[in-house]
Length: 418
Image (tube, rainbow, N blue to C red):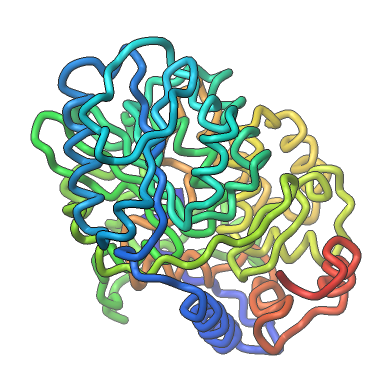
């Protein structure tokens, strides 16, 4: 939802300049990521490949080609370690990539099965990067099961590439990204691609974390551009949010608005090491973690909750995680409890929650991450519903530690940060 809108906050009440805090936080996170990152060519990868009956024919053929293209960018040692976990309504024996041509299509579409056997779990948990490859035709109840299965094996802290295969619809908004939602929402580094099986073109639907470097840079807008204010924001002068005109929303994006890549583009990427997360924890944009249950049960200290509401990217993580896990009712109750003091943030978050659950066909509207790099993604992280400056830079990274946040982290983790 916010990935293609460029906004500038008019709230200047912070004691510490948000840009300074954000810069310090970004540098700390980048430094931490680089210290543990490996080049893609040396990454240990596992490919979870949808081989259900709906992939028969062209889709499975293109999936196999994609596997070979991806693995051709790996070193000889990494190719030996690479694994294929094929799934339909069951998980098949784990294979080396040399057996890619033995894959065949049959059965139903139950992605949660990739988390159901010792061999598949071992392959996924050993990975520094995993791929989810599917045609996207997954029933809603199976999406919910998958959304809960991924954290159950502590896979949600591992970098992931999601590739949806199919015939390109008229607009990107018509791609069913339901199964991708649950992974993209929680993974700190994630890339969501659409592979057109008719043309072999690969589009970047969304990217975050280390994968944002694949996105095209946007130039800073001219200061002379006239800004327009949304009517609903004008009702609350404390939370004014300005929108640059002529920027497409997720529902307005065309295929021409999205960048296209080849799989060899992945070769230049450093892949950060997985973040160790317990089943109930999710990673926030500043590198710290929070208990998902504590959020929805209102067990966070009030200042910490306010900090979450101040960061739209983190709110997207929370509400889309709730939607994909079948926790929409609890999420709405939680949002209702903060409606009076966080009105604008609640309205925005409710739209994201609705987009992640409507009709079992989740759309790009409301999904976190970016489809452009530079001004757009910087604005997403900078703009605030309240005091975003107090969130970024907290925890073990940065120089603006918040005592409430520290107290919460010590209680949950026994130490500061992750």
